Image 1 (cartoon, rainbow, N blue to C red):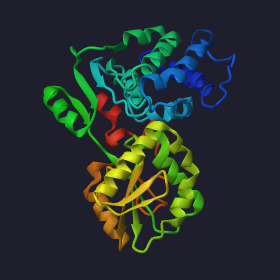
Image 2 (image 1 turned 90 degrees about the vertical axis):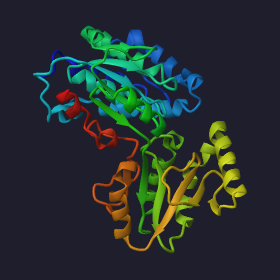
Image 3 (image 1 turned 45 degrees about the horizontal axis):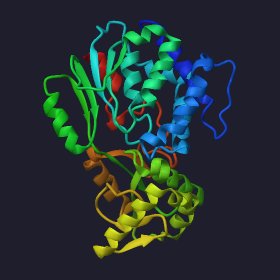
Image 4 (image 1 turned 180 degrees about the vertical axis):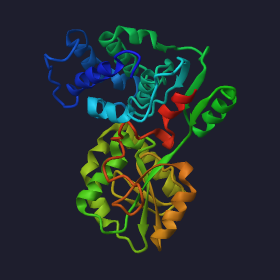
Length: 352
């Protein structure tokens, strides 16, 4: 059992967010506290791009819709069922949130909340508005949540454990700074797709969703594809044409022009369709507007490689070619129990 009815507040939040997942948000009179929050939420969605140019209204709506679909009573029951937080002694858990895609740190906030601990949150400068707003809504639904969540603009102090997300460089700082505390420290990861040439056009269109959603800025976005020797990229590019409108967005277009120029000046051979470049490369972290690819002779080679380098990977996408891989189009629709870096956050919080 939760210490008090936090789960109902989360379900109410899901109902609230459900109103904003389409291009024409529609007010549902049955939703709690709409009179206080509906119009303000519209303002949050419209103004997000002022604080982070990548947070377009379309991308914000997708993120909100994803959370609305996640925060159902059945999903929350399934997420929480394996854990018992009845004997938890409340601790203060510092959260250093990422801000590369909208609401990427919100799962950590909710994990601390449902586990019976207190969250001390430092939001990312790139995503500093929406998390506090949603916390405010939760408090309106269940006022006692106000005692469980603190948002700070300054240095994290007075915490008992920490969950921090950043780059490989900042992770080294986190590991030193938080070395005396129980911690989860997340670093850079990337996601890959494994193809064998049997994929349908619809499969490849869905793969495009994994590539282009949030302009490819998330660790769950596919940044590399493994393809068999002799693979023809013509069907791939034909499917990617579905996402051609991304080039109309100035920040994406600037990255496309810059990264393409760097590749050409470096005399790297690339494949190009006018808004996406493909570069043969053994690495995983391709720049914005580009996807790396690598040929394989036998699928077992890829399986071995991905197993050996699992600590660099967030998601693997395929049509069942790789065990436990994710279907095309699903990388940016994680379930509540799909933990970042495959580290069970609730299990960690159960033991601190």
